[in-house]
Image 1 (cartoon, one colour):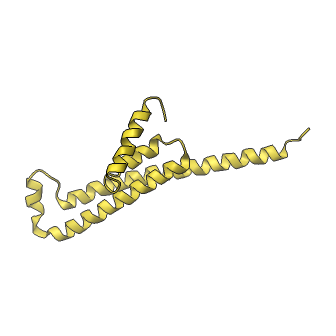
Image 2 (image 1 turned 135 degrees about the horizontal axis):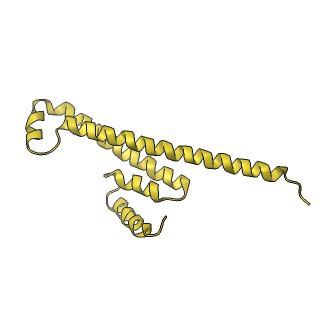
Image 3 (image 1 turned 135 degrees about the vertical axis):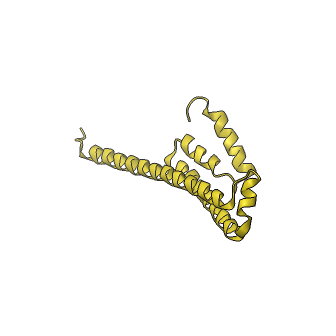
Length: 125
């Protein structure tokens, strides 16, 4: 983690401890801060799971809301349909971030394998 990120990381880990199944954002931020690629992928995957569960709940609520859509929107909050759209956009962004981490992990693994192969080919002596 970069300078100053230790406090942020500690706060995010505390948030995970307090509410592990709500708020996908904390997992995505932890994934960004984590230097260990495998840990970063774990955080990212957990964030995706939490976000997917939120989206499924929102889809169910949108299906159950029926004619109450307009009334809820007028009270200042998102309608269930709007919430589905917001969460869908968030899921798209989270999936892109996870894909970037997967590609970075694959590149690091490839580079490590190339270094190992190069070391085997060097003369010893």
